[in-house]
Structure formats: structure tokens, C-alpha cells
Length: 89
Image (cartoon, rainbow, N blue to C red):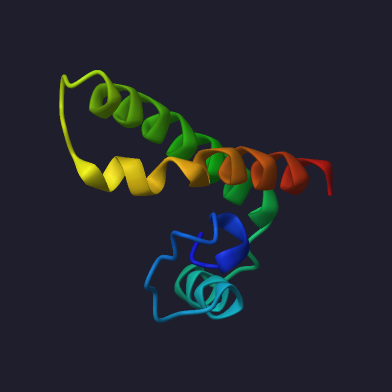
């Protein structure tokens, strides 16, 4: 989820580890190969996208104002699109 391709150009997470390095850490910790990484990553895209939809709605209706969600909103479409692309691989 830290790779820029999962986010709208106006929103970039700040993470100090690359995807392959993180997968390597999981594999080392569990002593086996991690399978279906793309599917888990797609699920993460959908999950974060759904959470963001709710929070953006709450922000826009004034029920829970937080300017962060205004900045995050353009990434929702990107998250769902990337999740779909991962499932189709």
C-alpha cells in the first residue's frame, strides 16, 4: 500500500520500506513463502477505499469534519481501480 501507484498524485504515504522487502520480512518471520500477496493487497485496497468512503461522507455532511478526508478523497477511485487490477492479474 506504500507504493505511489495505489494513490492519487495529491496523496502519498510516507513509508520507509518497499513491497518486496516487506514480503521478505513476512517470509523470514514465518519460515515459508507468502502466497497470494496480490489478493491480500487487493483486499487492502478495497478495505481502505470503503473506510475512506464512509469518512469522506461524514466529513462532507459535517457529521465529523476532518480536512484530511478532503485530501484523501481523490485516492478512493485509485484504490478501487488498483484493487481491481490486482485481482485480474
